[in-house]
Length: 237
Image (cartoon, rainbow, N blue to C red; front, side):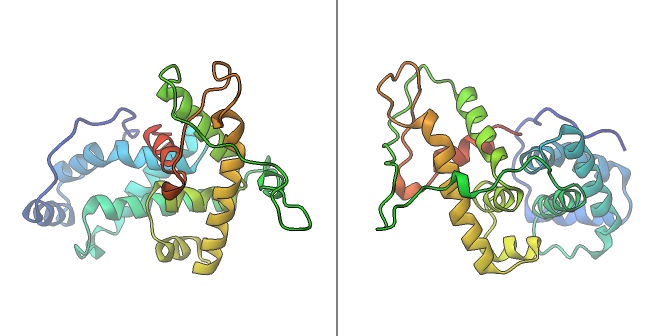
């Protein structure tokens, strides 16, 4: 199998139910053209998912290859309960998590230093300034790079939960199942990861007296870190 394409495919109309049934039937019969179609249509998206979870490009490429091989080996078991693309997304995430379990990152720091500090009477020791509207001078690419760099600083267990829940849009139960942990643990890790991410992003995104030197962005509290999530997702990394 050739390496996964790295450039996004042009937008195609969403497949109909009939299209999906036909594709699955062709795959299960071993139709080579159907396999090529699946790789062509889904490879770029799968690689984007792998890049968000894995920090090494070679690992991301290998994980996608493993995901395709796993999917094709098990296509006979696919019952059509979801779209082929949704099925492949889950397999890709699983492949990435398997690689992480085999290759734990060694340069992690403790999450405690990234969380807000509190005084003995319960008050936050450092005030968090409001993030203001991003000025036009701050390029989207810069924002995406800032968010991605901050996410990559999180300890592995927190980083993965944040990515699966806030970027890959998986629910708590799905995330807990993939990580082989409890839903309560996922909720706790996600809360702490969001807190830490806010602290990590604050120096670059808060309302700074010298706005020309430190660009800012406003993230409405009702949406948590929705802008940050979107920036990381759009990075394709």
